[in-house]
Length: 237
Ligand code: DC
Image (cartoon, rainbow, N blue to C red; front, side, top):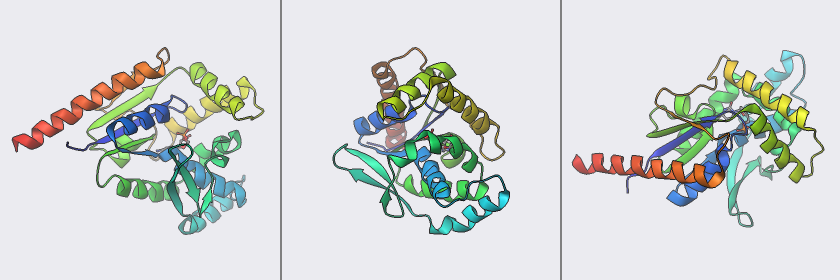
């Protein structure tokens, strides 16, 4: 069957990764969580004191970029991929509210974006990939065959995120999480380089009032139709 690229963009905590993971599994595709890559760079920056009020610190991060090695490796227990930073499994460490607070800022740095976008393009060179993020359909794969733009109300998204953090044992308040969701929306969609934007040919998917199963089924059906069309095109050549 013809393989395609599926780009899933949207606001934070819209459940992009949950749907993307299931979709990739159902299609036998590779799943790439690009947010994890920006989070890993942010974790590295925090650990090394590259985040501060003066811009000199960011320059230090940029200088350090060639030394940052990122890799996704399978986790046999969870059946999913974990993020590794210079050989260290940082899957848990990158999901804290501490990292969430700074990641949007780090994601505005041009040199960081260039490095990560370059890696992402290489990962999709063979197609058969589901990638989620903020600029996948606009910048990383503008020619992706299937693009989705996920959205939901800030309150619904904060509720989901709040529950996730509590389940992981983090001490946070709902107000703190809602504030972070709103702040990230603002920074992600107003930044100069590759702001979060719906690609012209993306399908908008508002899942404020939709359960996981329904979301998955709708998106999966759609993906199968797109794959079928691509296969027909190929056969007709
Ligand atoms: O998907 P996430 O919430 O884990 O992403 C974390 C941050 O990374 C998000 O606030 C914006 C940034 N990001 C980005 O700028 N471009 C991407 N392709 C993915 C994430």
